[in-house]
Image (cartoon, rainbow, N blue to C red):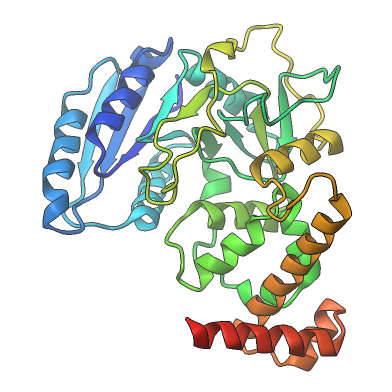
Length: 352
């Protein structure tokens, strides 16, 4: 039997309709059960759209079974998904997860189910993802011999995993203080992208209300990787309209028609390894250098990037009330540099 599907929705009925129509067009849809979690309105203005979402959900067709879970109150993005995952994995060994703005190719369910079967007994594989950056920003090394690759990052734009992985997540990240004061762990976590450690700090400080960075942190704690396809099986429709994707960009637009069904000739990774050329291209696709002010002066850009990274680390530690001397000891930064950065940060806080 194919794995059950959990769909998470809130207040975007048009996107949900497109998501469900595409999902129902999959070759395994009529053999798959789907549960749609509909979060409640935050305020009166949300009532019409959340009500429309529930109408779309209730009229969904094309699946072997349908259940709609209607939240009476707003849980928020993180709590809604965490609760839904906990409920689903309490009943099922495997699960496919699609959010309300993820457009699937007709082969998405086949790919994710095949990946679940292939890697269930490979504990170093945390999840199988359906999305990958488009070739325009993510060039695979010439001659790469597989149809999937492994990266130290959890990708949530259509994914599948197993009960033993997801139910092991510490959603409170109770060991965060030990991580926060260790720059070596920061660098290690950032292997999958330079944004990971800043995102985790933002989540733990209450600046974000999300779940996927906590999932990624759990993956990192357990030394696992995610499996991604070379060619994406999903496309994100919601850039610019989501809770955390508020800025529209076409940078990550994918051509899901290029995805192929996982036939007998599909080239899975037999040995789980991270190709460093693939990882470098992947990390740059997700997190291009923000401080590359002039492509003709890479040394200048690199120096600015290093300064920005040092500044972020000092700011993070200062927020945890770590004294300057301790920051200097932990980071290897000169004590005078630490004090200067702290003065800059205090000055900026006063100006804001």
